[in-house]
Length: 360
Image (tube, rainbow, N blue to C red; front, top):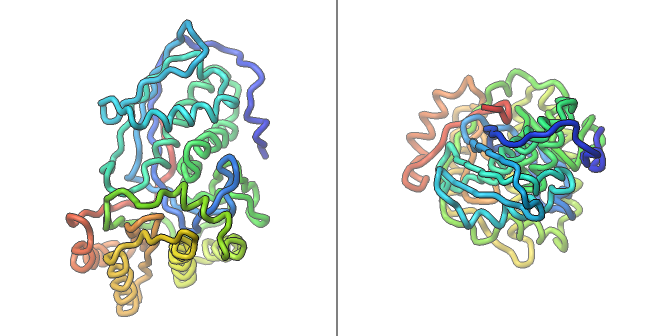
């Protein structure tokens, strides 16, 4: 298994003057939540996510060698227009990863990025955005070092993405990704995400995720601040242990296809995430009244129909409705008739499990 030192290149065998690449990388939705981190974007506990298919970022990277090679040089475009307010985040990202990609100051980059989902939708675009950029930069490194293996390429891409945004490391591969060291998951690492390495029951094939856009405004507390509040949290240690236990349970559930047990873990994890926010100091609530209305409606529908539909939440008010592909028609009818009214401007996005980042 690769260590961080393995990702520091010694020298390159080839040179490239200029060119461009284009990659798309999807968003992901955590089933087992990551909340709390150590230095260098190392997670305090392991997490597991479904890679999504439709919600993605498409990034084109153009590059050309430059004469002066003592600073980072890049232009950033979002949907074809200059995006100055994103630049400090990219600058910080390049500073973090320079040790792993020592060629970065040799080129001027033009980063042209767009999302397939509304930018202001409240869906986290940092995961897909940082993953797409990392894929492009790794593609350039592959030109400089064509001998690198596919495993090295993807694991290093995931590691770089993590240094841009923690959960971005789960957007490189599909369909189910584990990030964070766990004694019973072979190959798991705090440095990068890996494809879940064990059997996954047919019940989870083409699993659906309909994202209900409850609140598209700016969160009053950022995820970065929220993670930091876990350092002195009274329940932190128990929460981190619980995540390890739930991953053991999920491993068995993925093998046996028990949807009832899957629902218990997924919904408990979502509520635990928000319980951590509500019991930190300072405390905060990211759910909105309509979030709770949706949760109660899902519970009522599931109780009445016995259909295996459940919810999960990110660090925000939006609700991800998860359900098997075979129940798609009836669940979508339920969403349209009973849940859309709780969405801001009636907006929702239909998505499903996807396969990860691809070169276009």
